[in-house]
Image (cartoon, rainbow, N blue to C red; front, side, top):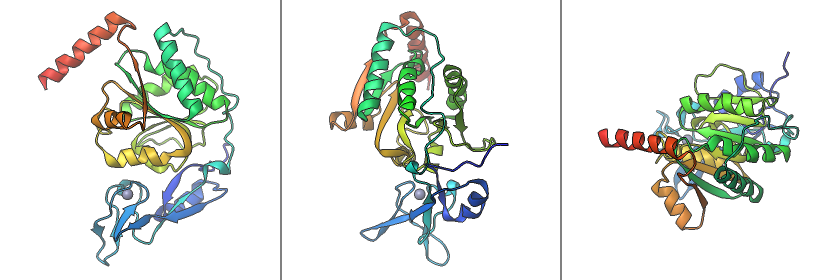
Length: 288
Ligand SMILES: [Zn+2]
């Protein structure tokens, strides 16, 4: 018999409250207005988009994040503050992966650890097949051993489904919550979360470390709702790490503006394997 989750770090539309109260213990349920009035326009506090749609009674609502529960003018967003509960299992996290990182991967892994310790926003550029996931392991272990909550998010469900067993194998004793639309497993408070970028809209200031994989992939690229979900899901003091094969224009601009640090894993690692992948990528690109 498992106890009810507290829902720490989660947020919900007001209309979902009756069900939420049945499913969660909610130790410190707080709320904030669902919209902010900025010079006469209503900005949704979940997805940061302007609410232009109106109900027949004239009240505005947000169409952009409707799928997570409708937010209507005058509504509140309910949430359990991240500091309300100490999550079990974080500090005792143990990396059970026994593989070896190459020198280049070790260097990138150390950079990830530095970013986590100094709570920066960072982009790591690495081609597919460069061993990005393994490079994250030391950083994830470090963060959790410091009692921090870590999330790995990716735009596509198939990427999350592929990541989950690999991360679970690397942290055998850790409870990992896997979240995506249509998933039926009951929610658990977990210090380590793997989810789609859509699911980040259900979190509020929840994560000390958020790693967003494949930011150049559909549907994340150029999607302001998902980008807002990332920014709202992290705690005010946190590390935010973007992983990409090709930095988007927005990321390049953020790096140039000094808002983001950057590093690159060169192709030399597993050169032959990587080169094959690169050829594949270009072949796909040129045929489309
Ligand atoms: Zn919205």
